[in-house]
Structure formats: structure tokens, C-alpha cells
Length: 116
Image 1 (cartoon, rainbow, N blue to C red):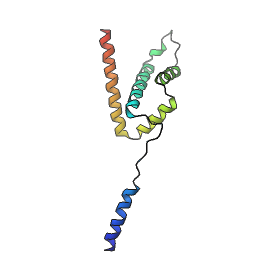
Image 2 (cartoon, one colour; image 1 turned 45 degrees about the horizontal axis):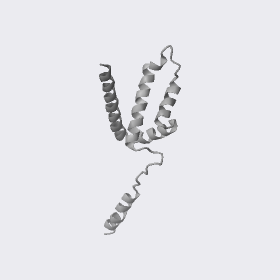
Image 3 (cartoon, helix red, strand yellow; image 1 turned 180 degrees about the horizontal axis):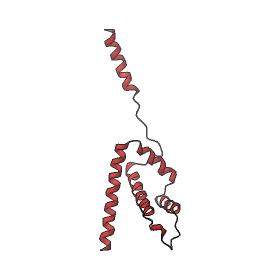
Image 4 (cartoon, rainbow, N blue to C red; image 1 turned 180 degrees about the vertical axis):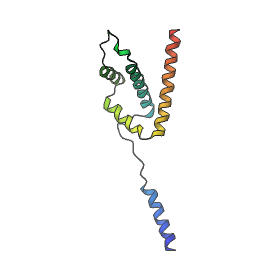
């Protein structure tokens, strides 16, 4: 009987100890993060493909990132903090990246359509 009573006393304690993580104050809403991450990935693509390195280009990699952060009204530290927060949940981050890829594909289709 004491064992059953002990189980009934300790089981609720186990669930009570489960702490739900509070979202930090700096955290953007998921939709905002997707918007920013989309722009970041486009900027990253420009840099990796070397479009900023034409002979007449005066843009450095750092200045391109700085321009992106300024255009979005954020700092590099804010981006990094949000990125690392969302990265903790890999399943959620995978879904976020699916949306980012979809948005980039849609924008590429728009550009291609305007070019034709």
C-alpha cells in the first residue's frame, strides 16, 4: 500500500518538474525569422556565386552582409541570437528552411518571368 501511495505522490512531481522554456525577449516571431532567413540565404548565394566580385565592384563580403542587416533593420547579433535559438529545435528549423526554399523558388520564378 505504501508503494502505491509513493507512486501517486512522485508521479505528479515528475510532471511538475518539467519546465517549459520561455521565449527570450529578443526572439522574433517565426514569420519574421523566415523573412530574415530568406534574405540571408539570398545574400549568401550572391556572395558564394561571386556576383559581387566583378572587376568594377567595390563591394566586399562584409559590406554586403552589413547592407543586408541595415536594409532589414537588424543587427548581426540579433540574427545570430535568433538563428541559434531556432536551431535548437531541428525539426522546426527543417520546416522553416522548407518555407525559405519555397520563398526563394517563388522569387526566382518571378525574376525569370520578368526576364522573358
